[in-house]
Length: 212
Image 1 (spheres, rainbow, N blue to C red):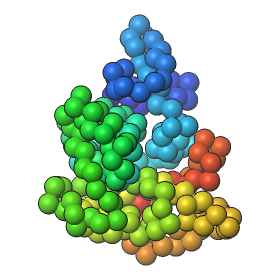
Image 2 (cartoon, rainbow, N blue to C red):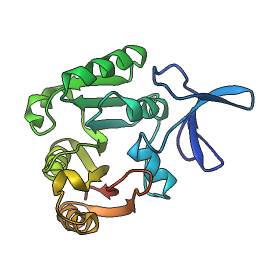
Image 3 (cartoon, rainbow, N blue to C red):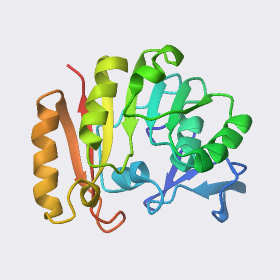
């Protein structure tokens, strides 16, 4: 497998980390406990399962994660980047509490309770990022993504965004929205990969980009 500490078996991804506090069943592989990285709970896992090839995550990378929620995907990234840092931004206080609890177990997770639409409020907390990853279901999600990448992503860095079509426009076909998003992203990045995440993630697409 191309990611540190992640095992791929029978088309599924597994992590040896079984104490993150989430509710997946664990399995034993080569007599060791693993938990599945569920494609129904993680857009990143779904994108990998759908064949995305240009995702670059190093064990000592610095990631800015926008929309970290409870920290499910973050918990797997903390295994991949075990020698790096994951700056995890979440706005909702209730779910952010669970993210903070996860960070108590994982010292490479740095939770930031803030609005990703206002990056100036956490500018002083961050280092330059090798990766910006976003999973935010808001109408202006592309604008938020570009704004944060402009401020924090290194030149040549990887930018990944999970796009939820219904949060942008419930009246438009998702394929039309994804095409519009692609045009917007091309104004700022070189697109490396695009995947529609159906049926694993309804009305979602995933873009992998590089900052020129």
